[in-house]
Image (cartoon, rainbow, N blue to C red; front, side):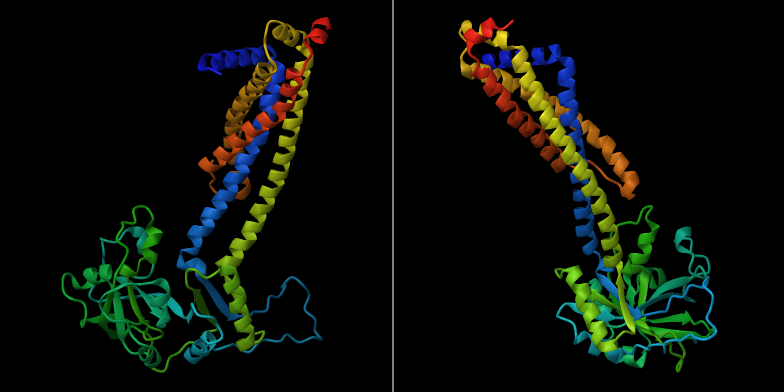
Length: 433
């Protein structure tokens, strides 16, 4: 078939579709609705997959908190005067507990403790104009952010030293006054001086001064925060990292009933949750529970998947209605144009050209159905945004699949009517009134 013949047949297919506008509109709408819903659902699943992939790359979503199980009571219910209320003995997690607990876990799991606080630094002026107002909610304006931690915290989050060294387990056990400072905080406090070996004074909660010896400098984030001021609290370059409980007076200690288990990248988060829960049951019995962002994400994902499956079911039903409409309407076109087909054959048209003509009509309708489907999908995505509460967008891949479905549907279910038209007997067709 030459390009000119193809162009003429396409023009004829468009003309026939326009002459039967209502039938053509029904087919286009049926294809468009089915394709639109499929594109919207695929875009939702694509968003879920991208969110999940990016989430598991962040340390926060690869951590689990092992904490003491607390009793939840309904204070609106009447108290029984007969049954006494039992209070569980508080659990006090020690450093040796972390070491022994890690032995119950596979390789790639780190158990650690970390606490954030802020203390004033006499080396900083009372008014620190360099900091945005959104960053001044932790005490006095000359306060610095302090991260009390055990030694596995830098290993899990991948903090990079640019000078000096990290403190050791012996420093944590002895609560030595050594610290690793962020590079940005070091410039605020010491200017261009080398911070390693410097003494950094802090005012404790009892208003007494204590000093930390800087033994290392950690690299902070290079990019600017812009309007994302919350990222200030994720930047190790703004922190002072000290051994756990080293900021408190000698003899003062706080019982801790929780710790964190971090999972290294490459380990399945779902399997990690079950491994940590099993280890907690072996070591602590029923005293501890395992919580984390993974569990909240799984619950939200179940809700989103349920909505997507329901919508996908309706999309499949709509597409089924579309193909039935295409089949019936194209068959009806063949029956109404039997005499026209007979005349075409009498004038020399062969079965192949008749088949191609009707198949091209189905393709034209498929093209318009795909365009309509893309338009419908944008409206459906806006509706899904309100249902699931996440920002959605129509994906290029989903659009490609939707367009392919529209073409496949129109070709597959347009082939049978075209075949029937090509097999029409011209003698019988000319006798048709």
